[in-house]
Length: 447
Image (tube, rainbow, N blue to C red; front, side, top):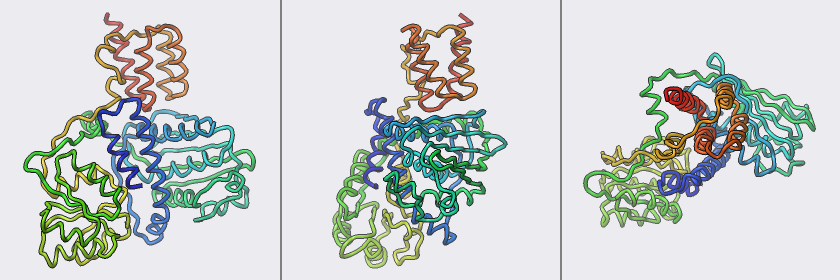
């Protein structure tokens, strides 16, 4: 998973990737993160039961977040020949305060089960937001759950009889974790089900909206600037990991940014290279043969008196924050799979780097159209625009897509207009779509 997600992040930030492939890369990344959440399931339950579980509450672009979830499961459902429908009642706030990872974990676990156990028909995701409360309803046309199994469905490793009929694999951790997380967030998760007809999960969560200034909104929604290098002398980084694919992944991340990188397969080789390579920073794995990362770090710190910054880069998440003889703190512990942005943030802080950046390539700018294409924009008739505006207002994305199909069939001159609208709809940027429609309609009236 470290390699899959690491390379997916590299591809996601590669400006040479064509726009029509960027969406596929994001699906790979989202699906990989979903698989990772399953791997982390057992750890999460242990942390929750041990009282060592914390939430990371931050500002979240809510429509964009929901759009990513919908796109992920539209693809999964389509691959099984299932319909997937998203229904929004009312409007969503632009920004809410939430733990993005845990909110996604709740929705992905339940939606994943819905797709997994449904063999015909489809899945519906309904969302309503009112008075700071988000109400999610996930309905499927699957085999349903027997009444006597509902009482145990949220117990760890419990798998209902439907899993045998559907020939579906799984750990039986998804629903228990979703239930625990929902309760820890002060919400509620309920289920009603009818055998042979399907199930409906209902989730209510307090997600307070955040009133941000126009500048803050722009900064939050702007794609993160891409690091292309750093100013000053060339820095040396020693990567220590017994897994070749993990070493090469870090090499491919760091070398294009201008770092000199040396690779070591063990703690012993790390000590040998440290003397000759003289690194400015070390990225150290833990589980290695002969000498592990803790021992190598201790020898560097206590015996060789090296003050070179050391980051532990390991999948052993339980070791994060543990006391150790090397004095490595939780802030210097990076859990695999590596988040590239977090890794580079840590390196930048420890080496006091001044990064060279360029704006991220965004397929959302002006709906994905170039300036010449915008100049050729032809609006459809007023009646069509009014109907489209109403669909945007109520947030009916499927209706918007059908209306755009209808407009495309009217006249080839509307191609650039419908392309713009489809790009907005694909990312569920309904506010941006509404603004775009309003501005262009006003320009049309002025002319």
